[in-house]
Image 1: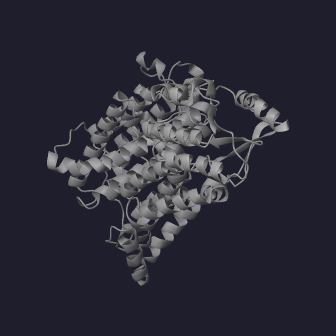
Image 2 (image 1 turned 45 degrees about the horizontal axis):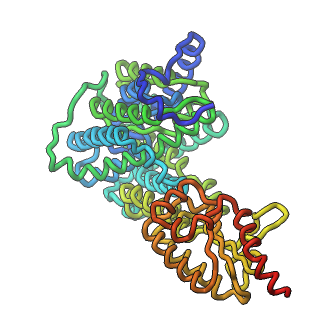
Image 3 (image 1 turned 180 degrees about the vertical axis):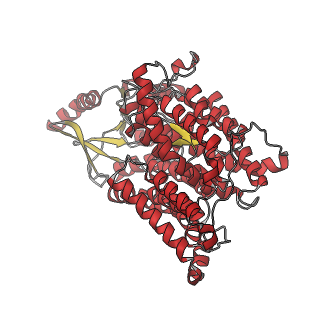
Length: 570
């Protein structure tokens, strides 16, 4: 059985995601790698289109970056290559800085990859992998849905043969609708044919590389029937051979505006890669070292920068491809890298005939799959508030930009956590045949039993919710028609108390004592007891009024009440 292992990260080893190597595993993973290459090469070209880079840069992401992660990473399944989310973040940030696919644009893209690698290294040194946990699944669904809508609209002009100049999604839609009479019929028909065929393959034969078949067929048809002479725009010459190792020549003034883009890519890479790697490690009961994976992701992005391509990320869809193809280690990804190397050496010539509308159609299919309507429906059914957050995140992606949306996604996720802590579930506990399991609303007259209120507060006490805690306790005592003799706080969920909350507890205790009410705390965890000692609340409340178990507090109340009840009966 596996979980995440940080303790073993000191025993640093290479190729942990490949070993042990056996003949059976080599054959199985090599076959899976061939299938992954067949499915991934067309997608890599599409991701290059999303990122705004030359198509060959997409192939470069499947070469050294994959080998680098296989060398340093621990996840046996995670595919680290070009991904739609980071490609969209990159394009959204760079489109206003340089002409798309130009030499200047590529210099900026390579620099972003290098900066992202640096951030990943810092994250490993400072053990910041936990940052991934602050991007909730809810806003991630909304974010990727927005990316899908944005990317899908961005390629519509190319699919229809319409020139679009706007960098904004709304502007692109306006240009497309305004130029519908100028649609190039052959280009549009080819785009529709590719989209339909890829979707049919995906639905009826998901293990068949439908995208590769569509791209190969369209490329052959373009070369055979000279579609370029009929107005269909083609990719043109593609650089052949393996990438050269380069370092971007760029000054600090140009680097500074790239830092926010790199931070956005970093957040997405950590969140998406970590979630994907965890999922498959748990499913296959394999050990996962998240620190090693951060080094692997750092090395992969450094390799991307050195080979002149853009940021790479752990891709959920490509990782699922490896698993469905039978791969069980990074040998599959290394095989894919070998296939891509052969393509770069011998098969880039035919790529020049690839119609750009076909590339746009492949990207459009990728975008469709990012729009997670079932996920949004599930969120709406189970949590309407979170559904609204997901839609807001998607809207910001489409209307404002990807870079701003990733920041919003993190902020919304944190606010959601703070909301639960600020307004936790509270109530008065009553005993049932199953124990202290029933909690009644805070209404006038609510008591656990005559003279006793057991008040439950469902979050740690800190400066933001301390006043709520105090006001509810005061209102319970003041509004109760019967005299309250004891108020016991069920502290099972109160794991910590900060300085401000401790001062509030002191004031609340004094207020209750003045009203003749005994203040006690039950179900005190060790972390809370440490805080009570540090803030000297033990001295205020009294050690004899701090209980480990709720039934002990109730028994103490009953014992305390015996003399009063006896005098009442006399």
